[in-house]
Length: 336
Ligand code: TYM
Image (cartoon, rainbow, N blue to C red; front, side):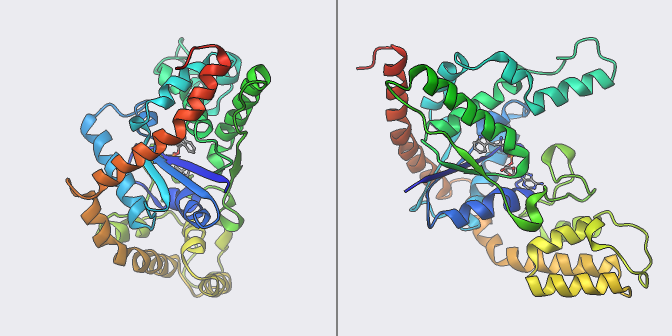
């Protein structure tokens, strides 16, 4: 079977955007692909400096996956930091990757642009080497598992292309001895082709602090949904659903009939944004309520999560080792 692999960075509580962009599509692939999903905790280290936060978010990302239906008996599920092979391959692949490629990476360029706008003389101010090397580590996550497809949101397109690019370079240099599988991205189709918006209408993102966390307490969920930006069209006025962040969210969580009905009512007038938000809250909370108990159980210290992750780490290392051995032989580093 072909391999599907994806990761989530524990830089905050996992949110609706992570679900639509990565978790839901990935869970759908588990019946047809060999699935390998992980928590990218060392990627989070490029921005998280608080050890308690890093540990907490790592646990909530893990508990979220399982509460939402990941079956550890069918999916290899682990923490990136438990697989040291990744970090060894990371060095090897950084030696075959052009620095210019990393200079053009979106996140790095965005950091420099922000510095330029604020008038800083050092455009690299605040950029650590982890941020700069980020795409290489992500390429290794993918390549070390012989991944065929990477289900991710559109914001990860460049990263997956870089992984394919780096595999291509390696294969060009050493392919006579050992080849890495060249991966492809799989992106959510249809209404969610663009990023899911957050409460301020921009892309839902932990770094914008505009997220709706999946397992926020119900009261907080209601408050966040009520606070989603909307224009000032009065209740009676006809509205354009396609400019509404709340409607974009609703499209992803309500049934197709409900979405069609809501669209017609908004366009007609007489239905206010408040009514749409109530319906959105109902759709999200009726889906999550039955899963909450399981989440709380898993996230608690000493839960079965630790065993699941320890088992996953062994499985992941077993998969990674032969790839690393192939690479070591190919480059001329002796392997016993
Ligand atoms: P991260 O943690 O930022 O996001 C995890 C996944 O959620 C998707 N996503 C969204 N999709 C739709 N709408 C949104 N508003 C939205 N926000 C986030 C992301 O596209 C992603 O699929 N670099 C990765 C983590 C990573 C990884 C990997 C992924 C590390 N190694 C190897 C795949 C394969 C990241 O920062 O995702």
